Image (cartoon, rainbow, N blue to C red; front, side):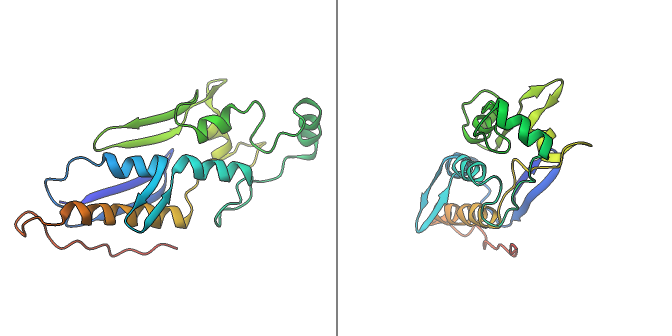
Length: 188
């Protein structure tokens, strides 16, 4: 059996890896999913959670761990925002988008976890559109500012954490139930 790890934002696949030779009887991935969402330590590997990483991305206006800084506001909009929302950074006006992206229980935050699925994202309807996707993809008049973009460190960390977690879960199993575990991919 193989385990597929896929992270996409509205069809834009940011991480897609297959871990081969997974034990057929591992059917509950709650622990690694919780670590991806909330962070944690497994052996020597510490993984910052998705939401904590998103908060750093907002604080640094996109420029975090090799990700590009979000495009500047247009001069006209920058002046309007200074007047109406003084001190607010890029992608923060009311704070709803930032909150939905950095807190799994916030209004507009999408968080679904089962034993075999982890879904995280944002759904903030504005005029029939998802506000996060408007910024993620951009519009004719607004440049794209990727609200959710995985860094190379996140990708490698998540996959490495899955590998470590699976090694722990496979320890002591009979060869009939497990096979050699290989991960032939590199990031970067």
